[in-house]
Image 1 (cartoon, rainbow, N blue to C red):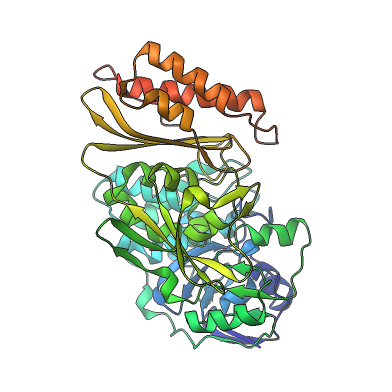
Image 2 (tube, helix red, strand yellow):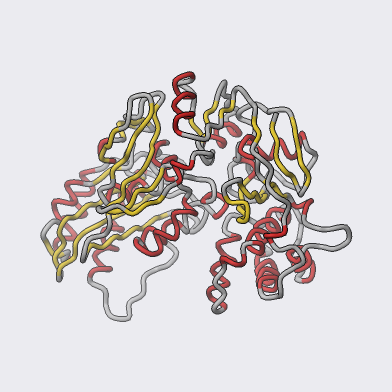
Length: 472
């Protein structure tokens, strides 16, 4: 049995198969067909819904229903586009869309409405000091929604209008209470403590672990992958902690990237800029720090940053707890030292030292909501013109996210002059043999990575008044 609240009404339904998405459950079982399937991979936003979870019942999360495991709805308050209007009264977001003629073919409109609904209901979090701040929040809210009719201007106009008018009749705190979480499935396990998790791992050591599901559920959709058992990590408060340490920060493996943003904005601005380009808000609300490391993708956005900052992992599970440098975690293409029955408990992220700088640059075909072709993260202590403690890591240049020790050695203890840049390019070209894939060719990646080193050169030797590109 799976129990949750849907559009203010309690719902109980038969437990679906582990790989069932929230979209399939809503459309096929519950008849909520306003939520559309456009891509089944979390890219287009047509399936956007909002959920308020048991641990945060007053915050509305916009998520992609197509890659959200249906069982994660247990105990949540789910809102679809059918639940916004009350009898003949449209929700303020819907009314603004009508008044600004912001719908064309209409297929993407429900998802766009739901993204703006989440922004509207969470408006107490929105800093509207001036138009630029408001525009930033609107852009982020809509970053995961594609309009194939390209009707973005009236959509943005509708968003501005609704965010600058008085509150509607149903502020977030007046929503119906969230019911207790109920999921009695025997093949989809939702432990609520680490002791429960370890018991599940002991019974099912080979069962896949799922947190945000932003990678696993794409496989289920695109490759029709099925699972005998899944172990869900989203109800474990121990994995969602962010705590200061003497050496830096303890970041739980289950912390979402949206939850990480405030820390990044305050202490690691370059990381924050990257996080705003990591997927979309719908993706960041689900994707986790631990998941982005554990899937061992060579083009994962954050592992190069953690490598550049000399981060460590705390691993736990059937093999016991241990601490491991991230340098030693990846063993090959999508393989790691993480054995069966084990998981990433936390990331230990060192603080930036005095005069230490972090640079992160991502190259992708689209600025937002796209996978990188090449990503470079570089860290160094800058004293005058000299670079020390240099650590540079790349994504998309090898079978795993990887550091570039030969390149680091060329730069260590030196000023990055034009002559040193030529040496650095040569060292980098000899250090990696990138693969060809659908994202980019090996030749492109090699040239692009060299250009990122040159970008660092121009950054360090910037002419006063020089402005960097914002779209790469």
